[in-house]
Length: 473
Image (cartoon, rainbow, N blue to C red; front, side, top):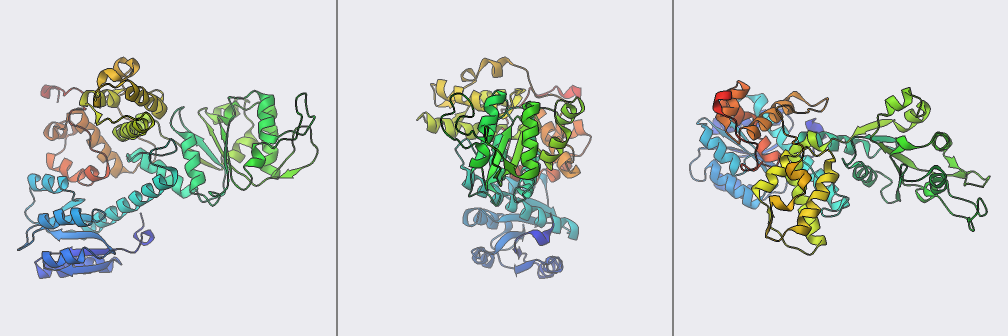
């Protein structure tokens, strides 16, 4: 992310070594950051109250208030501020301790300008993503069915694309497997668009017969057919100035495709049985689980309509490609269905969470949602247990394997972190074994995952696949 695109931010630098303090200040000032600098941890505590402070870069070993004490105070006073520690006395133990207490990153001296600047840039990127996520949840509701939930690399890539696409007027084609949440994505696109104050109208093209679908979309004039006793507006008119979501558009009949193409080209409709053209201003969002490229090649979907709908394509990731989000989603559904059913539950047992994380989820997020609703309804104890989950989850196909799916276009840095993360899940958190399996030093794992442990929900150490025998490495 371009730092120039980030909000104006101030970096608070704390180091009792005046020469190093001045050097670090100059590094950030050359990069265009506003800085505050002090050699005293006590003074830094006062400056933490300044709302413009976004990131703290502090030495670990200092007289008086040291870096870790300052870190703890920062987490209490300003949990929104990211904290980066510098030290010449780095050990694995101090790094782990700092990460557990909430440090965003841990940098060793002698400092490298690129590493220092990059750490602050990444911290600001995280803050921006958190703010965007909070805004989305505020607008769509945290506990209702319209919420998008996730923090995994695959979800973040999808979510950032969604935010970029939303303000435009372009037609969007949402692709992805059934149950991934394409309607939620469509609602989010509408919610972040300039049309957000106007209607969002959805229609499932696969659920309605051709004659009924056309009447629903275009409306009918009185007397258009037997039973049409009055004029009725269709979805196009009801969505005027807003967004029309065409779910499962790949199941539209050839006749309906022709009529839809005319609306996209001319911006006008005619009611069934009518002759008057009606202007409509609608943004189109379409969704399908089918491969429309193949449908076009085989003559089942019009090529001209495909290109009209597919101005921008947004792929909604499957649950298999964002397995890190399973604990978050499970917790989200647990809260929602506890509220709906007037129940109070503490969470999931390690065995239940392990089953959720290891299931293949062919039905994606929708299947997980239904599994959690069933578990909440049937639960007789204070936590969801393995026996509360559907048999298909307890005994169904396992999704965790030695292979993993990486979405096309994922940055190399994200791929490295994700491979390490998944290997640690496989080794039940054994970093030494994970390092041997990956052929890297254990210290590299700590360094690579320093920020990852703060950005992604931590996997429960009891919710892992069986630990492999060390001899297999």
